Length: 223
Image 1 (cartoon, rainbow, N blue to C red):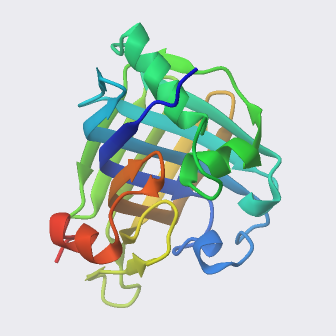
Image 2 (image 1 turned 120 degrees about the vertical axis):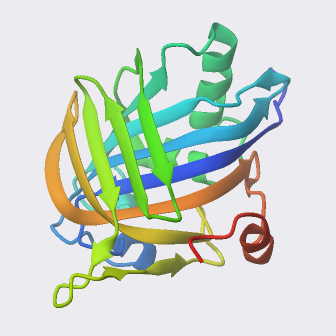
């Protein structure tokens, strides 16, 4: 099959069982030895070989027994039931990392996810406000998450924590948040006051499609 060109821009969020500030992004082991949680993105503008993907939400739950670079990971993808067969085919082409260079996000996941679970097609509730550092994912009977600002433990005032990764593989810059997540599907977890981050993302077949300066210009954070 010929290589299909694609591009996605939109809203991204992650939740994991580690303490604030993802250790994987700092080359450190998970806070509690294992890493579990959920990731999701809403495609504000996207297409794959002529198939329009605008407005679709993609979510996944995951579990790694050690740091993610050790592999042996589990992941269950969750797609909106309203996606057409063409859109599902396009999304799975992207998510499986097919025809993507080594070191790009979905190609990396294709290597470290050794135990893929059957996908779920259902309704997905999505609220995302990066300026307020608040978000919510709701997948009935499968997943519920919530992000809110991190509070100073002494003054209870909202704190802003930004992660900047000029050579990142998922995003270049993200707003840190206080995350809670509960998974009751194949991959189960239940945690509060753990790591979460929100970011604008722009990806294509070759990875992040914008450099840090261009991403800052086009997608300013809470500011």
